Image (cartoon, rainbow, N blue to C red; front, side, top):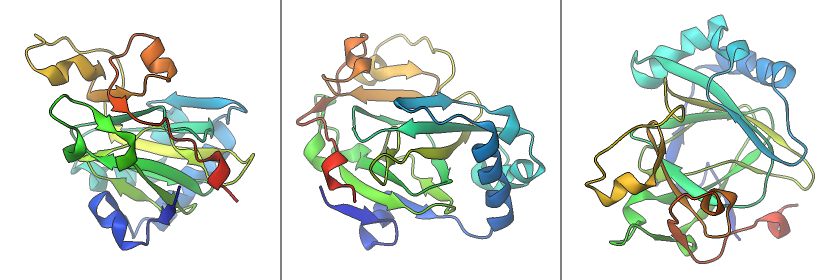
Length: 216
C-alpha cells in the first residue's frame, strides 16, 4: 500500500496541520510519554486522561480546537498495522504523536447507499512525531498504525467532551443509527474485526488492510 505523508496534496481533503502550539504540544507529548502505557500487543484507548487534561498547556490549547466547547484529551497507544474498522464523529478529531504514526482514512462521502464502504477507498498517511494534525469530521478514521516494524505509538486524541464515552439511545429511524456504538461515534467495522465479531454491524467490504509489509 502506498503511504503518503500529510505534506502531500492528497491530505488536504482529509485534514490539516495545526501550527502555533509548539509549547503546548511539547508538554502534551511529555505527559503521553511519562504517564500513559503503550501496550505491546494491540491498542489501548482512554477518552480522557487526567495527566493531560489537567495540564495548563492543554487548557491553553483547548479553546482553539473546538471554539470553546469543552474538550477531552485522551490517548490511543500501542502496536497496530491493521485497519479493522473506520469511525466518524460530528466534528473533527485532533491527533499528536510522540513518534511517527500512520492514519488509515477514507471519506464519509464514499459510504454507499447501503451504508457500506469498500476498503479500496482507504488511503494511508504518515504523520510525523510532534505535529498536531486535525482530522476533519468528514474523514473516516480509526486506531493509528505504527510507522516502523516493532515500534509502537502514543497518540493524543482530542475530541468534544463525552465523545466515545457511554451509549446513546435513538429511535432507530435512520439506517445510520445502527452504526452508533457510543456517544458521537459511528463505527463501520470489517467482518474480520473483533468489533464485528462482538456484535457491531458490519460497514466495510473488501480486504481488511494490513500495512505490516509496507513498513520500513
